[in-house]
Amino acid sequence: MNFHILTLFPEMVQNTLKTSITGRAVNAGHLSINAVNIRDYAFNKHQSVDDYPYGGGAGMLMQAEPVYLAYEAVKEKIGGRRPRTVYLSPQGNVFNQKMAEEFSEEEDLILLCGHYEGIDERVLEEIVTDYVSIGDYVLTGGELPAMVMVDAISRLIPGVLHNDVSAEFESFQDNLLEYPQYSRPEDWRGKKVPPVLLSGHHANIERWRREQSIIRTYERRPDLLKKSCLTEKERLWFSQWLSENNEKTRSDSKSENED
Image (tube, rainbow, N blue to C red; front, side, top):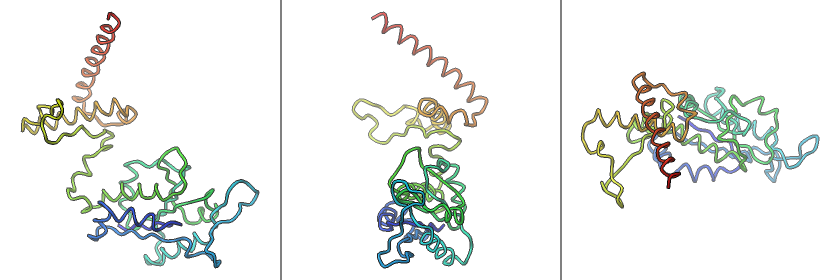
């Protein structure tokens, strides 16, 4: 897969994404990251790409032409095809795992990073296919969101992870959070590894992990649990666990009040 990041700060993108998993994946040829400097397509000697917005208002706006020329350069590089183009904006749909899976199917993906007060609307209408946000807050520019997307999407590309199945069983699969995990030593500062994980009984371990995923999702992201695909057996188990947990909470609360 090929990522093309249109940015005013290519060194910021390159210095980050050339490390860790993405860096190794690039070196191995599983993906490529092309940071395109929008300033290279400015039409003035100072390479400025911003100007005052019509109608007044605070701040500056990125001009349409340099962005469009940078886009056209990528388009020409990939053989004239019109690639899927994402504009990182708080006005977009919030990025999630399902979107990452969808984007990972693309051969080429352009990520457009805005700055200042945004980008001239006319070029957005011309080239953008998707508007994506990484959350309901405002950042200085689109570089950090772009790198978040690259990281999440890259993990789904075959060969990027050493263990290809690990991407399949991480958080948000089936709308469930990942179960708790433990490593050596068995006893750390008085906290012991759950006995089932030491049992060697794989069926029991898998069942325990699934149950822990359900519990963790209920406790931390109940909104996801409503969308999860639980079996009828799992629903019955969770209903029983919930009843027992609520009873324990009431009992503990009663004891505290009596004290």
